[in-house]
Length: 519
Image (cartoon, rainbow, N blue to C red; front, side):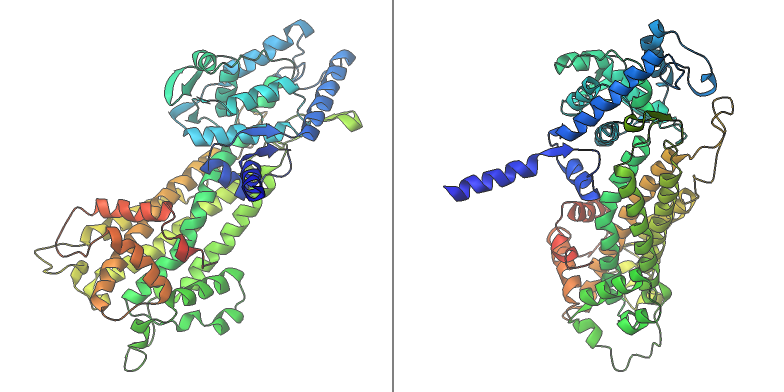
């Protein structure tokens, strides 16, 4: 009986998702995206929210001008707003700023942005009422997801346009999905049994002044990319076996004399994947090749640099997860209001540009390994890895697809964070373009999934020609999974279906038994 109760209690604890403003992690974000947990706010955080709101009330009673509380916004900060129009000021802010364009963000990104905004507000530095936090929680935990166009933020003074589309639904306007069906926001709220909020002083600004759209897009890419970046090492090992490459470049002594952490990590992964390889043993003697091509020999240097860069990206986003990104910031204990720039997305924008660059390089070197496998002049394998080449084209155009995607990635790797166009009549004269950086990084990530998938597919076909020799343990583990659903390439077939099977195998976790052995 106790075992059953203990098991139930453990599952119950796992299902809870409590926000306190300070304890979000990348792993918790990944958990949130993987399922739809009921989210609550910690009691201590609620006390901080109440303290912050009480301070707003004190400011209003004092009659002093406070930006965003009883003044206009941006260039209009010097315009004093009468007390009787403060609620109208917040309503006008949301309506005027909800002017995003282009196709909408995915529902899981919008839900993550809601989670992140709540986590920021409950610091108590934004001055919203507890009722607003509860309304956001109710929205997050409901079947309603705001419709949010993906373009229109310059990533400074907050992600104003997209966050305003979320706030618009909270006040019963805009558009939203209810059970996946798009409808007016007020109708969606009504169907879910939710009440619209009437915003008071400071609350409209608090809902839209933050980096949560940059974060949400970037975080989803980061948590998904973790598995695929590790997979890149596995794919490289599969290609090395297919091309009968050497494991000498992965010797730990090589990493020791150039001690970048990522280099050593990738070398260890490669050796794990290649352990007990009969293919490698078959040509240790009598092989007249002196060195492999860079795309094989320099995997530790290129993948390793990507690993080190990715670790930095994770550190930046981990820091931002529990940040207050509003303006002005309220410090109730000190009885101070500070106008500053915590809404500026530059830290995230730079990290996301870095992410796009490192992912692009993973794709670029992967494409070269695929070319080496399909090119008979480089591989000593049948042209394009198919029998009766000429009659059959095999992976000829699959490599072309890789080339197209790798080239496209180079365009998207151009940094967005070095650009700035002044806004708000030059009051906001330097901006981060963080959402652009996030969208670019996500686009590159989607491309490398296809590039790495095609590399794995090429290796799956190439290794057939080395039978009965067995590849290394890790490589064999990858091939065992792929061979279940992907038959040998005997004659031409529609390869896009094979591409989809490889991607599904990775995303479903079917390869995790191998990948979990890697670092």
